[in-house]
Length: 103
Image (cartoon, rainbow, N blue to C red):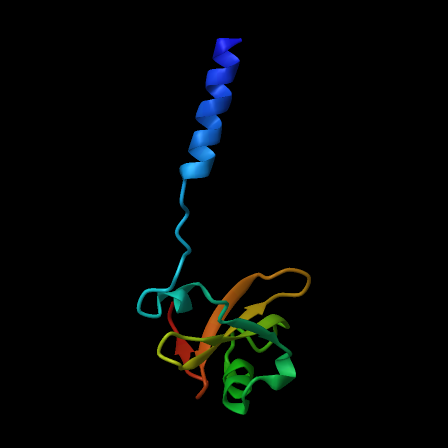
């Protein structure tokens, strides 16, 4: 019985004295954890990106599975595009001018 009382008292003491500090961003570091990826329709891609896709031998015959607009930490926008019919086979990333960006 003494052991049960001791365990209860110790647990209550631990719970009541523990002080959790709230998480707060330090120097804007919270931006690293924000979702910067937005799914868009293939029709909404910039003309330069569409042109590059249609001119490339690797991508012109493969349908776009999904397209994402990514906002980078330096506020530039890139487009990550997954190509494939029923599932993504490969992905490529392009800047706003249609240039392929290596990850």
